[in-house]
Image (cartoon, rainbow, N blue to C red; front, side, top):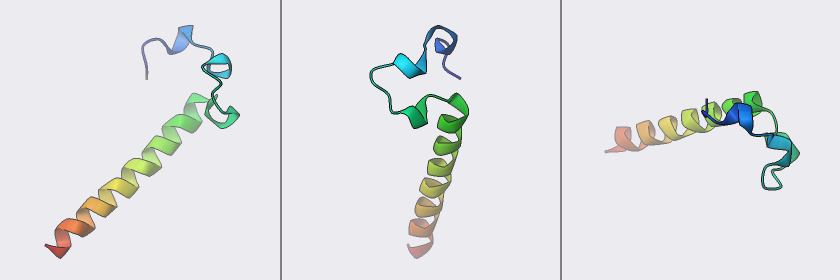
Length: 48
């Protein structure tokens, strides 16, 4: 978790889209992306 999260109001942060105002939503999106990247890298290595 970012160290400055308690000081940052995500609803006011640089016109951030509403879907990113919730830290749990950010964490979930990052976890999905990490899984997709891992799967892509693993598949690429399996082909080599």
